[in-house]
Image (tube, rainbow, N blue to C red; front, side, top):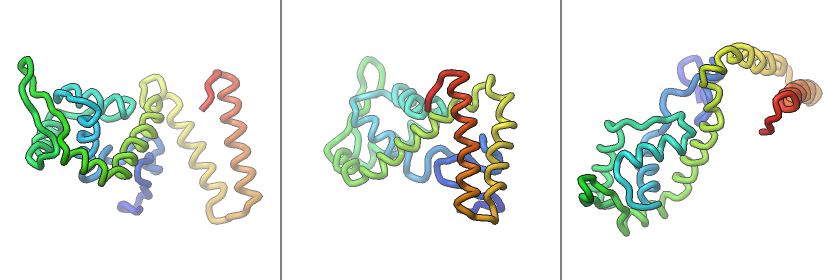
Length: 179
């Protein structure tokens, strides 16, 4: 997908700066489906749902009250969830119509949570401690892309892949983490 002069891939970093995220975590209508699926897991109040969204994204996405509560109201207006007051908090629960909506949109919901897990995998790239290696990591990826750009050959791709895989193995051996 082209956006201006930059190439962007849905759910992945913007390759102009490898560690930059596309503008939005959720696409159109996805917050609605994500919240509906979380309410389906069990009755919850708004703050709990905000925390669950953050947890599911590995901390990358932090929902605001200005996003969550209007969306919950929309879901309630559509008859997909219902709410009642318990101990001074509004508790949301799914309705039969909400279950039907989730069944109808099952693949879209699974796609949202798969993407959230992928984004969560990138979370450590944004820790302050990782700031010193972002530049070298970006340069490595750009060099790999340049090495194969414009000259597609199985041999060249295999050589670049081998270099990248050796670097990965060396890091894993040195620091004991497997992906």
